[in-house]
Length: 256
Image 1 (cartoon, rainbow, N blue to C red):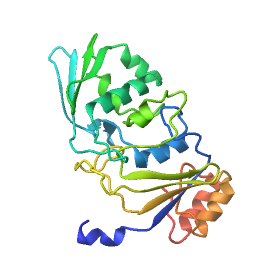
Image 2: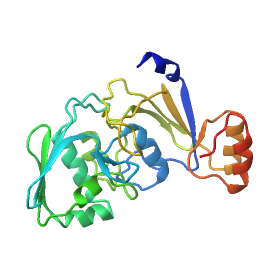
Image 3: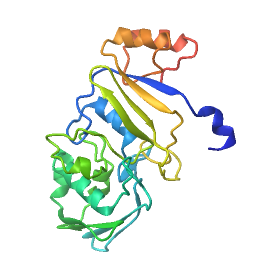
Image 4: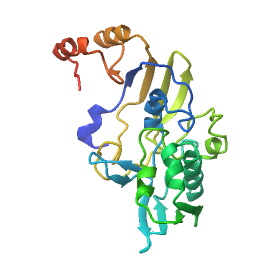
């Protein structure tokens, strides 16, 4: 932490969700509440920047054969899951396959692929039936199911069943979930971020808060009231147009 940033660290951020979290496994659901929680906990191989160009996240480098029929990827070294296990190429491959079997876009891309397999601890390859640039788009996919990279405790459970844990490599690790009430994540001290500038779903991430509490508040009026009195700090998703002007004029509130 830079000295100038120290005052920005600490505390708990309270975020309201409009619906309950149905599962901890985003390969099982396309629900936005689960995805919101996942974004703090789990990461993609690639992430879109503000220009919707896929940028490397867990991948460090990659090459494509001149004929486009082989892609080779190398992961960043020393990245750890929240259970302490080091991320490997096998994890990346099995996570990708699990996601592709579930997602419609993933199924389309699979039609171009002959085989996906690890080469060593950090490298893995895609062998193609025919070339396509959609490989990176699949790894950075938003909408549908999230192509997050997960450890064996999750990918060894069928996606249709859904794992009962949420593990990842992100800046926060899952701590608890009370269905119908709230979920909480806490800063992961061993998080290893990319160093490129933050841009939309890509780039450096900083865990400024000690923890984030996701509070389930289905009623829109209740969410607005809780925001106004400081019980929550952020309303996730849209708010009713009737409230926009009033909230924009309120001190210490920002509508974006």
